[in-house]
Length: 493
Length: 115
Image 1 (tube, helix red, strand yellow):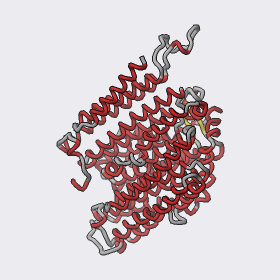
Image 2 (cartoon, helix red, strand yellow):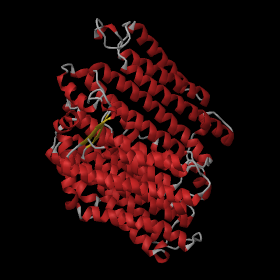
Image 3 (cartoon, one colour):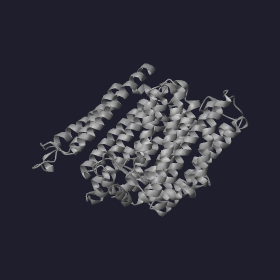
Image 4 (cartoon, helix red, strand yellow):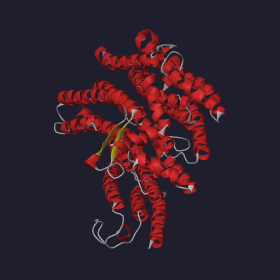
């Protein structure tokens, strides 16, 4: 038993609490936020290698034996996601320095970001379904603060809807947990994985599984529950949008992946086929949105929805290639979405608008930005050897090996639409007649561009060096596909 | 007893849905409050009602003698969370009313293009 896996949750919590003591000292705020993000990243990297070398790490709080106490479980899948999350928060903090504005920095912006990190890391690490609810509420509370942070008219209007949707989905979460508890008598995920196969009446469990899909689907923005996402995400400023786009929907995706591989496997013919169909519909709905809008933010926001569909389709196939692909694609997508929002944010600052029709000719004045964006856009579409390719390849392979081969065909076809939607931004903003731009200080431009470029470089490395990461990913997929490994690790404690 | 509770929970959900479909923001917030009450009562009922002994293992007390204590712990957590969220929602609603000058959801429709 090692407490290491609690560090990525506790460090940002403590740092955020300290930061709340001196909101007006901006330099200290920046320094401590950066330190907090760095310390979290370091501890999560230690955790990843610990899990890789020594197997699944488990802490059961209060030293109660496993089904009674709350288990925190870190397998390779959750450790990988914790590392990615901490990395993204580090870059978002760096990107926030020049973009978020002093007024927001003085009103508890960095504490909110770190509280969000606490919630996300906790949700990825917990091994108890009710504790998952609690951590989801922690991150939602931080996200409520962030989405309304600054109090602009549009933010206030959209945050009401965002709050309402999430409150309803949280109430449904409690309902789903209550029903699950009444049927199984336990809330520990490993214990659920033992108890659920022993229950003969699978009908009620299928209903509960679908109810959980609805609950997590609200968070993950699957078809037809994604309706709230585009308008809400459009409201907050760019660093917050990057944080939301990279992390929040992914918590829902993670929860679906975890529950649908670990214990809701009693009626795969129905639940997982439903998941596959919904995933494909999600992709198609996202594609329509990505092509329909001429707003750079909206285009990338709809690409979040497409990616959610792609990842969930891989999971629904429940075979090795599909699950491995989903994990790879999930990590890729978290990084690439953050970086695309960063770059699009710079473009929007330069033109003073996010409307594509009012942009043009940036290639002559900002060539580095242009090429960086192009690399990121190709990475998003999955052009080999960039980071989207290995994940998508495995997902498509998993689809052809699995029952829903038609899904793979849709994914391949929609890749072209994703490419079109991302390259359209490039064509409109960087080619064509130069349009008048807003003056931008060179130092501010560099402060925005450099974190973005480093993150792009990391995604390129993640794509080109995918072979290096495969041992981690295949180890993560192994645990997802063999729930016994997870169960044994939890009950060994 | 469980039957009565189920009816009560169903009624709370019905009232919550009715309130949340109205146009006034305050009614919607009251609706979310009722919704979480319904969810909490459901959690309590699903744990099983009945049993008079305190949930302490002692001589002569069998498991069937006391009510399951776990759902009560869960409800306590859920109540605290929904309390915090509701108060936050009320504050945001008040600020929105100040900024936007309306609490009618019909008028809060639309996108940034209409701004």
